[in-house]
Length: 255
View (cartoon, rainbow, N blue to C red):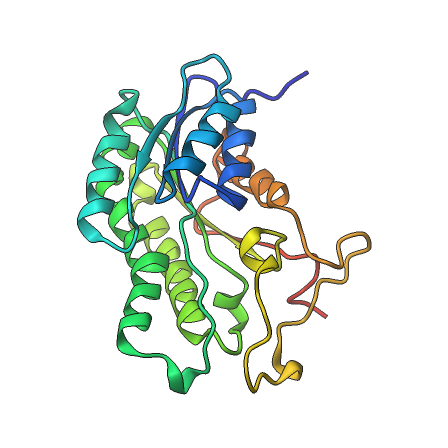
């Protein structure tokens, strides 16, 4: 029997045009959700919307730029009104930049934090009033880099650590309102972003994050592995789960 934990519910997914966001869109659609899909990539959004159209109403798509505060705010406002309710917010949009710490300029630092942290805070601010009405929840995609740190991406790790702290703080503050906030920390996941990474100049390979060791997954997880975690945390099955950090990394950060 198909699990329909999101029937009658609406979910907003940012960074929905590819990778984890696309996988989340497919998973939540399969479980009955009406979708609001947001990303900078208009063509990618159209493709995902077609693939995730389950017949319950075509996904509503919004092109926006997470690096722009105004664009993020208008996206969140539109998402709330798209289907008349909002039950689950999946803050997945993000960028990954690599550089020796000494070479990270102010503009790059600010952009990485804006996209990976500040934009999600603004989305939470905009959607909390609606989530109060629906008893909804927010799931943020952080990273194991935010737990353990990572060489050659200090700004990325700092943003993800801040995102984890943000989620924990909001979980406490809004617990009396019945809103749940949780984070997922993926380890290495096979997406286009990681596939295109090339060694850096003067890179010390001994500092690279440890690989996963789980049999059958030693090259990393799949976006669908993270989507399964999103579906759990966003559903009624996790009604007593808030302020949690779910690590999905195939043992990368343990042992």
